Image (tube, helix red, strand yellow):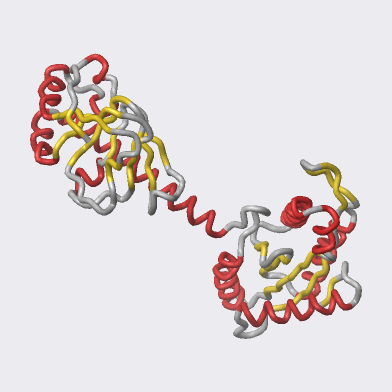
Length: 312
């Protein structure tokens, strides 16, 4: 980073969010506190390992924001008129992200020592800065929610994964036990899935798994939970459902797939698949592992009986 010459173009700067509605005479005084700096491509402007003393306003170029590591995908892109470093500028702490230039850039830099003076010069600019801070916090919350969602969802099928299954079982088993309600589990396995992959290709197998997930999930209640447990295995939790009703539900799910002789996919028409199903009901003080073990044992019996059937 090196100092640069720049011309104070008040009309252009007044349209930037940081200076929105700041009176021209105040803006002129404020700009005396800023210094222009040039950045080369790939230069790290902010890092979690270095305490930040500056607020940066991007005039030209582009900045990328990375969380955790520069090897991760950027979470946002900053364009001219946007700010960087406002949170660490305010709290005088380390930045929470990396900010890196993707092309030669020009920024205005304000040192933290000028912060008190800003309150006196322009309450409006401080209000603008607070609005930017609020947006940054909300963006961070969305990133956290998205990360948590991605950590719990299988990207291929859109079903929850085993991590979420552990969480939802704890919640539903506790609730059902407290209310003296039953809880049943269906464990499903796609029949002859290895042969399906060998004959039609792994991409076709992915589409078949997506078909299974979509077909079954659309027939479940909102309170039911379907998770992809393994490669071609799925688990469905049915709270407040006894064994007889769960058996009828499982049979209906099995038949809905059996009736799909073929389906359309991006790689053409593919043959449908069938599933074998094991059923188990929650017993007193069951752990997830013990319930899964009994459902898996019932699933093994279904396979031994010729597949495309339900046992338990």
